[in-house]
Length: 131
Image (cartoon, rainbow, N blue to C red; front, side, top):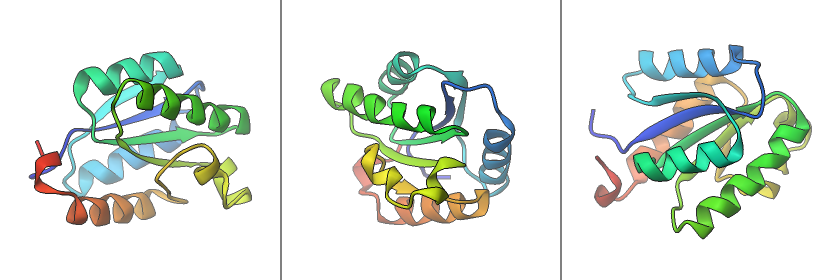
């Protein structure tokens, strides 16, 4: 599949079920993505920049972890790297503006919705962003 580098991570938590589901659904839909596992913000930024990640999926279960996404976006901006950030997890449906507040580009409530968001993004992504 002609796609840019993509990665998925759980930020500052150890609840991996949601990530496993989203990862599996994306892979079953034909997408390749790096599984960054559970990472803190600094490690995630380092990996994203190092690997040239263009689409980054971040999943969280708790609000404090969701709020850390804002720091990840700030660190990526400082590094001169602006990946598309798609977020998901329990805090986002409760506050429908939270994804914007943390600097994400989109939010998905379910794994299937995440695939739809990724598909739409890739359809509209300039050719220069593809691997």
